[in-house]
Length: 418
Ligand code: SF4
Ligand code: SF4
Image (cartoon, rainbow, N blue to C red; front, side):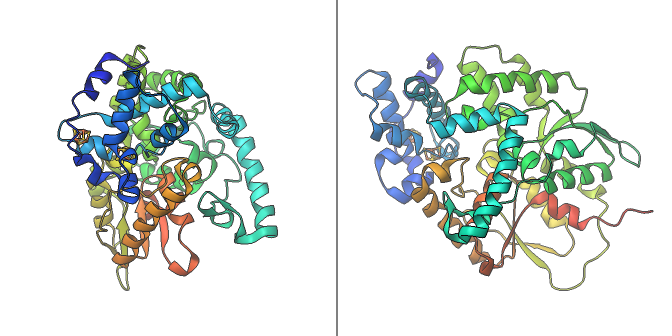
């Protein structure tokens, strides 16, 4: 399963341990097998045939958040994140997936199934909140704090093509991730409004499906590939300047994860690279046009203090960190306050908070502490997973709102002339 290049990369590890200082799971546990260096040695010995996969070994490998901090920091340039992703393909091959994951992946592999599951969750959530209130938790998040799914899938609420009223300056295709489609429909509406006000035509291909990152990051390549091929066919054939995303995980999957996965599986990755070249996070597009944003003239009262959390998949997956800050600084009445450890993982990591409850809680607590130290009343971010984690772990008494950056842009737009 492992390509020669990845195996060789493993031998470039000098075992210096520099990566430990940025690894969120090592910083909490202080255990070598919860550190990048230790996990890399596990993979090495497995590949050399002198280590069998025991439950403890599996736990060490599956408790990595795939936050990429180690790879970004390693002085020897070891692509340790790619190594671990490949090892998960191997683990899936050996053990398969638990029933709960198989159900989840079955839903994600078909939009209609995902919607039925989401609608059932909406009904079930209301019932459980009424009967059990805050007692029931999903992972670390009280069920009452989970966002309510959309009443209708976002994509069904929008036409396939939306043209701006003013002079057209560009044309983009919108990759609507599952989170916006099923839960955060307001983010989708904010995306459309901001792009149209900037004069950008938006195409929303209706047949698009889940980007498949939750599947292939868990090692389930077989379930992920049909989605990947379907999306590549759709987005490679649409004539646009850019493919825009509002989810850091979808963006990082389309930009980096999918081309690498196809290469690692020995498949033709050309189409995925053509698509990847066009993928942009919404903050990159808005930052490019920030001077053309139709913003309100002024805002009265105290400046609203906002802090920004860098999602791992946005800062390290897509190389985007300055753009959202540039946008936030340009909004009237907003005062951007930097957070210590803004680029450190929030503890979410897809389904991590449900699979590794205690470790995830500790990492999120640290992030909460850093948020409170800024005194900011709003946390802006660019990933629905981080938003769900942060908002789900804040109580109403914390008086802190978590939003997608694009929602703050939308709130600042001047009224459209009649
Ligand atoms: S992965 Fe990089 S930083 Fe970590 S021990 Fe190996 S060489 Fe050092
Ligand atoms: S990807 Fe993140 S959690 Fe995993 S070993 Fe590297 S730094 Fe630690």
